[in-house]
Image (tube, rainbow, N blue to C red; front, side):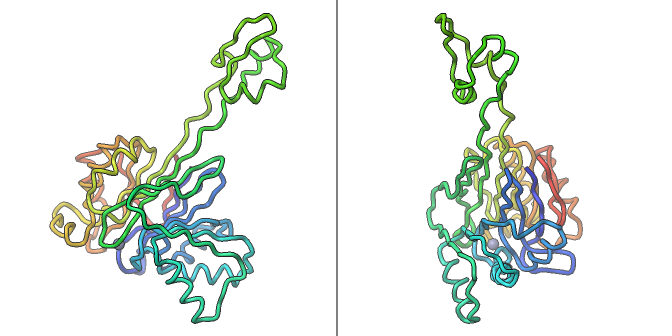
Length: 301
Ligand SMILES: [Zn+2]
């Protein structure tokens, strides 16, 4: 699993700061999470093959999280895309995008599917045989969701030596990999633990932006390998959080600690601060394993 940060600053694009967009590479998927202005340029710089993006997840309809989307949709058309594109985002996203396409008479030549969200409870919004994606309802000035990406456990792998030893027939292998025990012809039972190895540990990633400090997300993101949590402000500007419904680095770290996550990635920084190190220092007073998102940086789990 690999997280590619394309942009991780709040509000306005600047010479060296791009608004929110990320690519999560997980089990052969290339999921785009948020699509701020400049996402296409960042994608080109990243060398990711972006025609492979089939699913886009938009947290909320503030411009710094989705103004890059109409441009990307249009570019896909110009590049002759044929593959379906699925967009998950708040109710209203379909109207916003289709109005732009309609006014420019630039309908896509590929199929565009909108999955509009309006539930205040977590929902399973995508699932295949390898991964699941759930929403994480957040608290912001407009309706907002984070997203929880989880790998599904692979089947158990066969212990070939043990299987040979008991001369177990191939026809039983599928059931053994699913965790079933085996009864031999003489009636003796061989436990599955003797015939298989544990599958590799599954990985998980939680994206939480934008949001104010909200402890009720802790149970849902408990022990994820990687948590991206917004840290728009430092504690010195905590008074701005209530008005703007954002979090501080300290609050992000408190969530990470309570959820006992593997690693915390901070992002969505206000451009008022000169150095990102201050975010890290503040967070590390609460939680050790803190990483700083930076445009172009990648994190591998
Ligand atoms: Zn916002």
